[in-house]
Image 1 (tube, rainbow, N blue to C red):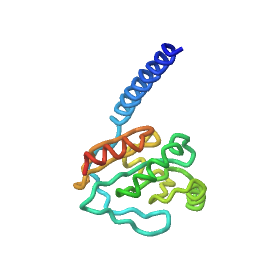
Image 2: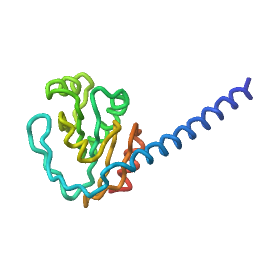
Image 3: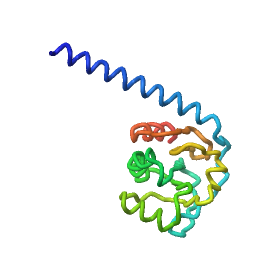
Length: 164
């Protein structure tokens, strides 16, 4: 019995490591098409109508997501946690009206900054084709990391600690 348990634990660990490697390879491949230019945007109009000016002395996370994306829903709590400690702008792509997005945020207890990209202006500008996609810029607004697909809280914080 003990040997079987060890065997199953070993198989689970190997599977988890293999899955993590595969996900990173897929993310790397998908990220090749992203617009990797330095960030040239100085401000965003948020969902509440206010203007959000990007701070020039801090790293920035831009997170593309959609209300209709199941993976985005899974990742939302990770982004929520990150937004408490870092500058995070999220862009809801073709997710409906401002009221629909506000209702989605409320029903999921999310408070991060949101831009409504109703016409896919920003997703086109950054050449985003897969959701979620997370871009991490250093304080000079040079792209340091891009993650296409699900990202863990630990992964996000690890990347931010490198960018700091």
